[in-house]
Amino acid sequence: MTTMNSDRAASTLPLVSVIIPAYNAEAFIEKTLKSVLSQTYQNLEVLVVDDGSQDRTPEIIKSIAQHDKRVIVLHQKNAGVAAARNLGIETSQGEFIAPIDADDIWYPENLEKQVQCFLESDPSVGLVYSWSVDIDQDDLPTGIFRAAKIEGEVYVTLVCHNFIGNASASMIRRDCLQQVGGYNSQLKEQAAQGCEDWDLYLRIAEVCQFRVVPDFLIGYRKIANSMSRDSTQMAKSHQLVMQAVRHRHPEIPTALYGFSSSSLYIYFAHQSHYFKDHKITLFWLGKAIKSDVVTPYLRLGVYLLALQSSLGLALQLMRARVGLAENPSFKSKETKNRMTLDDIKHQKMAIKLKLLVGDAFHYFIPKLARTKRIKLKYGTVER
Image (cartoon, rainbow, N blue to C red; front, side):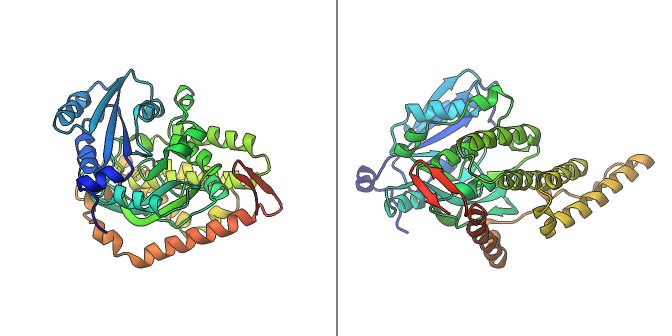
């Protein structure tokens, strides 16, 4: 694909507004900004919203802004990620809005390919997303990735599963965003942060269609102290988001909400297992089974996860009982794994399997509501 960094291209292509909320982000904000400013697509503005940071975040972003006039620094008292994103969006000028969290990274062609997808799509398309890989503190892939080819009218599928996966993987048409409003800042007031992006995606799916860029272009950082690991708060956030969906769409079968909760809890279990929190892993697996008494038993990974965590917990208890410390020769997956992005791309069978499961999911889940009418704002859709 031809890069879009000439003056002529910049004057004719749409302006993209990149929105970065930053709270105590000194560890990674420079890497994040570097990945944004080095995009092959150059006609952009970057609005970094300092959300009342108490570390060196303001100093770092100010220094970068002095060397690149595309970077605009905004400040607010600590009000949460949703309020910070909304402030950035309100101040921005772009035709397209591209959010990215302050610890994630974009690979060089992300914006270019997302813009190109928009330019080749119907105006009814309001959101374009790319594929993601989880990365560690050294920007190296952990081996976990998100890939789907779910497109078009995605509302019912999105209720069951956030196939986009994170807040840094999407580009949103401003006109569509203005129709649905911004991020829900009330979730923070209810101690329920974590699903602001999912909530927004659902409201966008009511009025616009989705498209995908089938390429790994997002590095989604996973470290032990990241906010995304606050599973309890995120579970409450999901509950409140789904309550709002139920209120707007009582015609959606109740079983789909149980499926949605179960899928999220299994995701929490995998994250806890990754960081060797075996007790918490088993807790979330139990919650998943209580939420949906059918589908967890159909997932081979659930059995493997339960077995591994049970053995891991038993080993930890044995070591604690005899006073042995953790084996220093054992490295966690986070520090042991030294994969590259190419290694992920070469896992063709795993990618194909994930896409196959996603396609089947997108086909059959709406069929569960085939006797219902999903009343969306862009028209009643027969399922």
